[in-house]
Length: 235
Image (cartoon, rainbow, N blue to C red):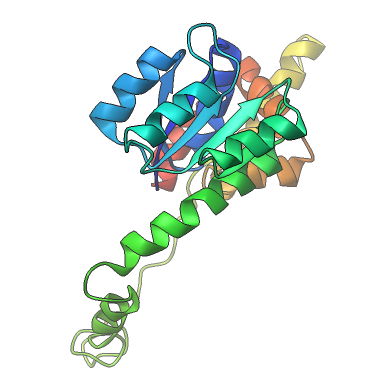
């Protein structure tokens, strides 16, 4: 996974993008202006930057130009704006931006742009100085199923039966309570079950439950669902 710097002067946008990208497994750093962005860029060297164009101190295009002129543009940069035009997008691309996202940013466009921006530098790092990354897998495969003590080895032992863990599909609810409390208890159990089933992936839970992802985040927070627990379980 990547280290991603989100630069935006709006707290709500920073928080939402941080939640989504963190849920996808990325490490997210936040900056609310160009000065903070410069500091994070110099100290952490992020793999990707999401950069808002309209900021109070220095606008995103100027910061992009600055990084390019000083040799600091060693990572892909995705520009964001709620007031962008075709000319703005072309200008951003001209000065080194890998993509341009118009606000409000949809989940699908965000994840697609991030994935595409990380593909080229990611594949280069994965290959490494010694060539492709498949050799390690092949080397590990040499001691696989047929090796001594492997799954099919002479001394292999049968695996113990799996013990169900996490929320179960069938549960009992106390209906002798106010409607709102009973409904919230059911919805909390419902979402906890699907989060456990999907290994904490908010993307798959959103698809499964038919909710838009930002609405799903708000719903889970309202119900008091512990998202960190599902992330730890997934890891």
